[in-house]
Amino acid sequence: MRVLLAGQLGLGGAERQMQSTATELQRLGVQAELTDATEPDCRGYDLLHVFNAPHPQLTATRIQAGRSQGLPVALSTIYWNASELYMQWAERGWRTADEQRLYWQGRKQELRPVFAAADMWLPNSHAEYGMLVADFGISRPYRMIPNAVEGELGQLPEVDAPHSDVLMVGRWELRKNQLGLLQALADTDYRILIIGDSNQEDSEHNRAALRVARSCRRVRILPATTNRAFIATTMRRTRVLAQPSFYETPGLSALEAAACGAAVVVAERGCTREYFGDEAYYCDPANPPSIRQAIELALEGGPSATLQQRVAAQFTWARAAEETKTAYCRLLGDR
Image 1 (cartoon, rainbow, N blue to C red):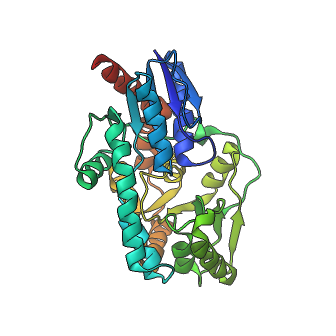
Image 2: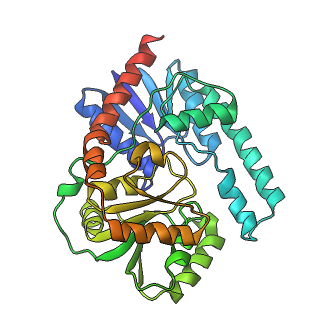
């Protein structure tokens, strides 16, 4: 089986999902190759697997390239309803409510033909599939592909890395909600470490978050990094990984932190319950006191050994690749 995986190449979660899946597929005997081409050349392949991009037209163009060349197309949907997130811009006075409603309506109109064009959906949770059906009124055959962590992450060697009480890893943007985290902890003495680069489209959020950061007593900010040993060491040296995002599908950093033995705080949004069950601490991302309460409970209660074991057993790239290969076989067998 020869498969072309099309998406973006870089530091983000979707990018790592594509790259890690391809690596593990190769170990399963699948000839999996990567491309970031806008219109991929699919000659010689059996199937095109597209990873949803932030720009719907780009994803649609890639899907159409596969279909026009006679290939079945699987789509990693990487979707969640973002209406609450968009209204946060209005609630904070950065945009008007009408502007944000119209923006989200337009976004959904752009996304619907993207999802409709794929032959099979590969969401990261059953909840994501349900959200797609509810939001767009369409469905496709699907197989849930778990998001995952490297199996060896917890065993990577120790390197020079900081200690922290509260760690956040992710791009600086309103969805990730660094502002909410910093507002929640601004008057505490906790050692706060935030790792990530800026999303320039979220400049209002980022400026506001940095203003709060300057008033915090013990906060350190580092750029994003591809050094996995540094990330693993940092996660082993933190007490709590906080991810108070307005939605995640789920975020990789929370899974990675759980694998490294940290307590995990996540928002009660997206598909977090499906992954973390009762073994994480939950917060309302729109409510800084709720974020603080969850973090303080996590600092007091500590990490969950049950969650660490479950992540190691169920949420690996090897398993994700096995499920993906099964989906490919089903899709090819249906033709």
